[in-house]
Length: 230
Image 1 (cartoon, helix red, strand yellow):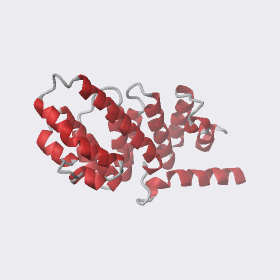
Image 2 (cartoon, helix red, strand yellow):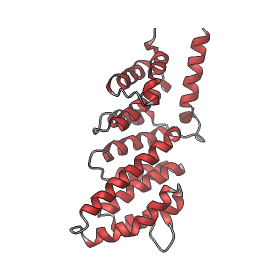
Image 3 (cartoon, rainbow, N blue to C red):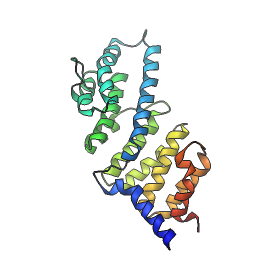
Image 4 (cartoon, rainbow, N blue to C red):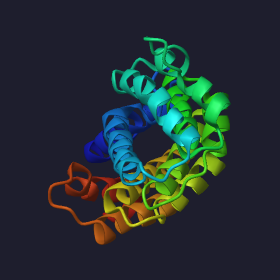
């Protein structure tokens, strides 16, 4: 009985982000999110470097214009990144208005969506993430997962679950897919969908084995909580 009570307490603690607006569901993983966005920025910079001799002038202007906003983003200064990064540079919103049809302008929509998610403005987060045209291997996964976070915050849990499941099956990054697979399990567990939660946790253990991952090392605890240890 005591063991079950401890397990129940752990469930409440680990999903309280969904219940309390002051603790967003995604907040526990915000460092991971920052690292993921930084990785995307590096990939984007590499792409821009490779294309520097052939990209359109508008794209070049957008890249130069957005650089300072990216710096503010990396400092967690989301209002400045969106509106006034300093030095006369454009914030992400102005980059979108000026260069929305360019690849850099498109990426600014992604940054804007993440900024609004951090700020707790979930309607605008949804707007810009949905407008963002994700391509490549990482960005579609991140877009779907972030929209899952948005809908979880808006308490539209059915849509959040759909996005988390889709993110966990998109792209080739085991790190991202396992991250959203766990979120899928946690939100199902919160919703009382123990069978679906167990399925997600068992998939995490089987398909994303990683000895260096804390999530994977502790996955048996989640499986037990969802009824897999009976």
